[in-house]
Image (cartoon, rainbow, N blue to C red):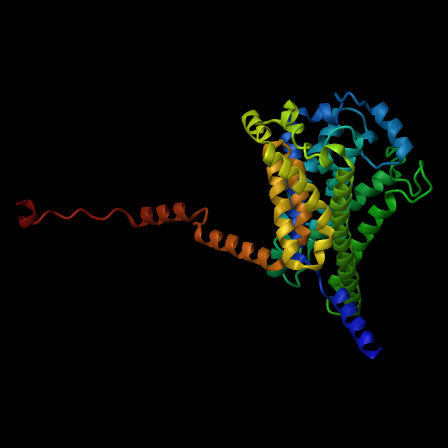
Length: 409
């Protein structure tokens, strides 16, 4: 009994005092930020047709659906193109900030708001990757995903103990924007404390709570940087991060397990021909010659179809063995890369690879990070060439010496 109590105490201390998977969380952050950024940039020419004023799914139709499901979006607050363009390009900036890890507490919330706003505006476009991104955007807000490999981590190392005036100014601006949205009368009920569609708290408590916690965190770091309040907040943030990372991992397991067991029940997956049909659809054939070459090879199609079902069904059971899990994880990532190339679904594949990254071994991530760091140090600095030219110009050309008699002969 004493041994069990000691083990529980050690586990609780690790759960509250150690940030689990900081590198995995950073890769998940970068991956989903890149997926959303790539989607927004790819669809930029057609943005108004998908989510804006030219969309066949008009604001009136979207409003009827939103009144029924209570989903959150800021696009119906104002009509017209200007508000849509502002939200869309804010989404681009938020995704870029999440990738770089700049002001991640604020940019992560803006990332979540823009993802939900655009996707809930028109739920009839997109693919399975949008659903994964939709869910993960909410989970990322509660993780400490900028502890490593981010501009926030670099700023924390360089300005340890310094007053963060930029963060305080950003917090005040976001608080003013949230106040205007709450009491401005134009939010259309999407920032109510209780949802108009269902009797549960709406989106406002989450946003106000995140804003208040950010202010409390700044105040504690400003006036009690080494006291007990800071230790308590740090432990709570660590626990919240660990819980959110566990939820992300559980979500990935559920995605693969449900997808695998549903495939088992399908007749096309049972007879090994499920991959054959999308390879012969023009919509999923960005490289027709490649799709035709693979579709004509019946044995590889049969093996890939059965292998997909086997890997997805078996993956949750392989988590107990690290080596087997790593092998299946590499197989699934390679499969998603193949889907991106062969079937033309790069955003979906990138979103799934980013979700899979939560299970990557820390040693592999550290090795990759060290390799990228070595490559960066070997590359010349951006201004190195110009500085050498400037030094040469200051020194001047080497004087021309007259030839000697021996050289002239």
